[in-house]
Length: 281
Image 1: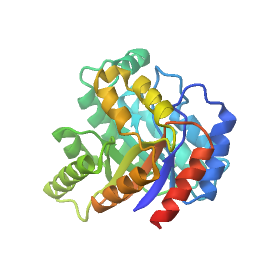
Image 2 (image 1 turned 60 degrees about the vertical axis):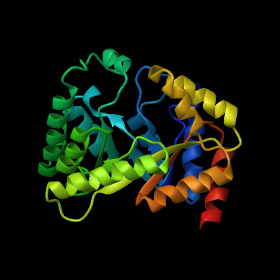
Image 3 (image 1 turned 90 degrees about the vertical axis):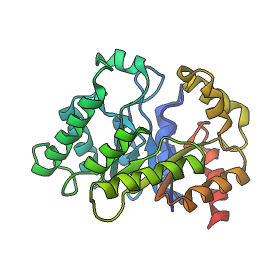
Image 4 (image 1 turned 135 degrees about the vertical axis):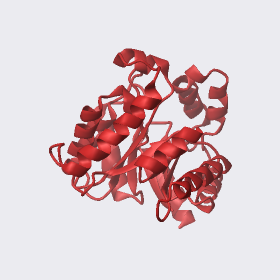
């Protein structure tokens, strides 16, 4: 299983030069991808702008959206952004998309939440067509466009993934939650008669040695979920052993790539994470 690391672009009050240096150090480390999240109504950086900046200072590491909220953007705009980033990075983009759950982001974007599932299906169709027929310029670096992942935890989400995407991106949680979702993704893939198996990506939060600060950030970021935010905060990986057990659990569940998202925006976190992963190797 490959292991990527998130950029702290969604943590409030982070200077841009820290993101750039984070990307440089991640490129020099054992990580296979750099991941970003997507919010509008939060003190955070735009995911495509962030990945474009990091693409300019890296060469080998993959770039992944974990995820962008598709319906917040017109289909043509999303296709243009993704194709541009893929071309600028030499074909390193993996585009993860989902519906999103935050009403305030939809309100700020001027997009109604009602009917977003149907619009998302139409958007995914348009994305595939745009990448395939070359109507989006610059053309993506690879035929057919960037690798496309679809997230969500409903039955319709798995059908949507199998119909339109190259794989599934899970929203986080313990390995057993990923294993259940992966089983549903494989079943939906087989039901549609697709050859092979879907790519399976996961994500989790870490803040090594920073239990309080990391938990405070997660409580704030997920405040819209009410009491569930406390459960998310409790899942933050703060010790080497907890992180190793978690990574091994995802690997055993068949995850292809796990992206570890930081809850503390300090460069020392990258070094600590690399040291822990070296034990796994």
